[in-house]
Image 1 (spheres, one colour):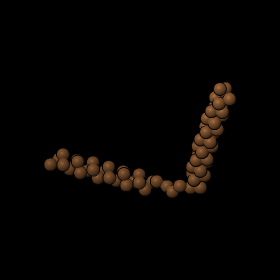
Image 2 (image 1 turned 60 degrees about the vertical axis):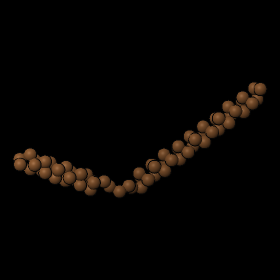
Image 3 (image 1 turned 90 degrees about the vertical axis):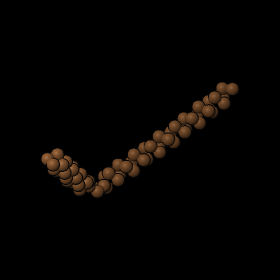
Image 4 (image 1 turned 135 degrees about the horizontal axis):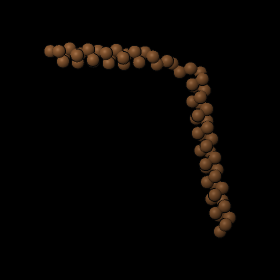
Length: 65
């Protein structure tokens, strides 16, 4: 019976901790949104640069033939 009581107390403690952690999540602010948009822009720019580099390589291969 003692183990059951400890198990219940442990489960309650874990539940309380998880509920507390869920309550600590704050809403995304304007700085976080701006940072995410900057990350997207940088990633998109990197992809464009990569495509341009591939086109240059293809053109160089074609000119070498």
